[in-house]
Amino acid sequence: MKRIALGVFCCALAASALAAPKDCEELRKEIEVKIQAKAVPSYTLEIVSKKEAEKHDIAMIVGRCENGTKAIIYQKNDI
Image (tube, rainbow, N blue to C red; front, side, top):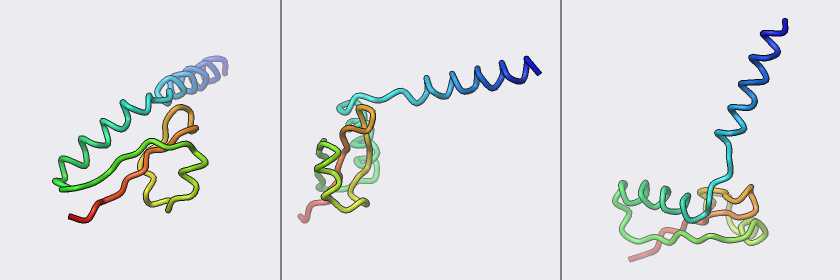
C-alpha cells in the first residue's frame, strides 16, 4: 500500500514539474514556428492580459502563459 501511495505521489510531482508555466515570449515563438510551417502568409500574434483576452473570441486564443495571467491571441490578416 505504501508503494502505491509513493508511486501516486511521484507521478503527481512529475506532472507538476512538466506543467511548469512558460515564458510568454518562448511560447509565442513556438506557436509562430508552427504557423510558419503551415505557410500562413500574413498573421499577428499578440501577448495580452487575461482580461483583454476575454474580450476576444475564444478561437483566437492560441496559448496561455505566466500561470494563466496572459494569453496569446492569433489573428490572420487579409493580404
